[in-house]
Image (cartoon, rainbow, N blue to C red; front, side, top):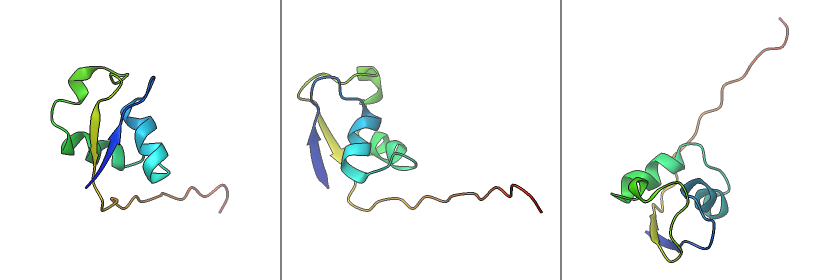
Amino acid sequence: MDIAIAKQGDTVDLICQRHYGYTAGVTEAVLEANSGLAQLGPVLPIGTRVRLPIQRPRTTRSTVALWN
């Protein structure tokens, strides 16, 4: 499991975007891996250690047909 250290102004989704390159599905996995992280508020305190699951959850994308 990787560890990220929160910088000034970091949120969980910003850390996920920086580490994984996307947020869909991984933000929830990171919150599950870090009990109590959600209670710290939307902006994490500087220096907060955030455990990042190594295995990236798969995301599914739905396709929208613009015409038939």
